[in-house]
Length: 202
Image 1: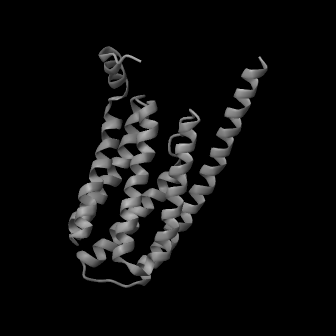
Image 2 (image 1 turned 135 degrees about the horizontal axis):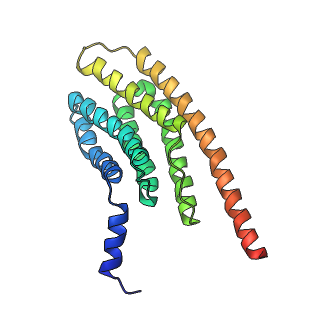
């Protein structure tokens, strides 16, 4: 296949919009977030997580409002979510040992969803845009993380009960979202199989 500059320009023009740039910005924010965590700069971590959370809401809202939903955006949005969550979960787990069990559960959940997304893409099935239950569980994760960081860094108050309680709720919400997404996952697989069988029959 000969690469054509004209075709590349068309692809970029079709997919390069504000929502997708915001999703890329969220992926970029992972680098300073991890760096601040390792340096125990919790003020920086809190600022980055707030920016990431706001941009997470912003990209989907802009895509729907201005009808700029693209195939690339449908992949970029969940990828940005999962990479940010994985990085934050690992960093928080390293700093707060009392929530280690919840960290492991959340890691397994996100790795499972990444594997499911890759499976769909390999079968030429685009993952569905994030649903409300996925967004709410992600937002609550951001809130839980920021509350813990604010208590430790800004207020100088820290009790193991608070992160355990917050991450217990977060984990339950994430598991519920995982269950709902897997219902959609199997429905998409069945639909794809039905379309394939129909095509062969015709």
